[in-house]
Image (cartoon, rainbow, N blue to C red):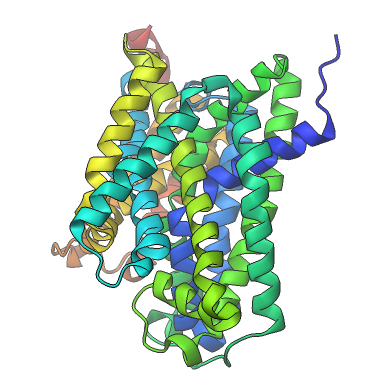
Amino acid sequence: MKQTLKLTDIAALGFMLFAFFLGAGNIIFPPLAGQLAGEHLLPAMGGFLLTAVGLPLLAIIAVAIAGGSWQHLAKDLPSKVAALIAVLIFIIIGPAFAAPRTGLVAYEMAVSPLFAEATQLHLTIFSIVFFLIAMFFSWSQGRLIDLIGKLLTPALFIGLIVLAVAVFIDPQGEWMPASGPYATQPFTKGFLEGYNTMDTLAALMFGMLIVDALRNKGITEARATTKYLISSAFIAAFGLAAVYTSLFYLGSTSATVAAGADNGGYILSQYVQALFGPYGQIVLSAIVLLACLTTAIGLISACSEYFSSLTSLSYRSWVIIVGVACAIVANVGLSQLISLSIPVLVALYPVAIALVLLTFVRSKLANPMMGFRVVTLVAFLFALIDAAKVVGLDVSFFEGLPLFGVGLGWILPTFIALVVMCFVSGSSAQKLARDNA
């Protein structure tokens, strides 16, 4: 029996994935990066698009090629190591950082400006309501494609299109000289800034939600699942690239309305009010609330799906646990949450990137099991050094390493390990296989 989807269902699938990705970080980071990049907008945006769009796209494709799940992607790693990496990623994109950040950004950009003097009580009440709504939409495990792809995302799309068209028709200023690292290393700085969206980590886990949605539409064959998973990835990537481009351009032309801003949320707020006048905050609130809510739903659903597969607790039990944890962590504060997440991202992102690349070259490896283990270990060890530098530890011994000065010291060692593993094979891999059998 041939398994096919209607075009409307394929589009809804892609929109759902786009909505999962387009959340807090996707909205607050590009405007500030665009303003700081100024005349170096294009290289800075190119670096950002590489890590914030290109890598998540490749990650979804890698998941599809591997078989549609994290377990398939990490099958050549020791089972306990693969489970540990997955748990760490889910904690980061779930209750520890990314999911609470959606609630914080929604509050600070969409709700806080409505009060003359916002207080901690306002944040607490909002975070409880926000994550209760997210838990409500996450509750129906098999209906995400209908709830998100056909209901919330179209409304979000309309708001984004209105904003993008207005930005290009009526820019609020001229490009300014680049500042900070963007003046000397715009591409590298943009590349690292893309880490903050956490989308490559999320992409490794969102695949299972798409596969689950496909199953509920009657798509169970591996070939059909892979095809539609990749199709949804390209739709989502196109949407993300369009949004980032408009937000970068918004930031680069924001000096007149938001000079000296220290966060992208403020830039976006001031710009939208300049474009739409007194109705600007309504437009912005609608966009931010929908973007953050859809991402929160995706993250809570993905975490609950995975943790329910590891434990005796049901999917809905984990929805409650993760949702409550997100509401609690959201009260930490946005700036504190971002500062805490950066070292963790610097340490884990290279591992995720290495796994994605290994999936594409698996057939070229002399011994896939050995190759996956050696390359991911090298990526992780050198990423730890980059993370140590971020937290202020003395790692000057490694200053001679290429790209270490810009926070990418892991790239060359990982690439060398990957090339070596294309030629090296040995009995140790068979021994590892026997030990894990």
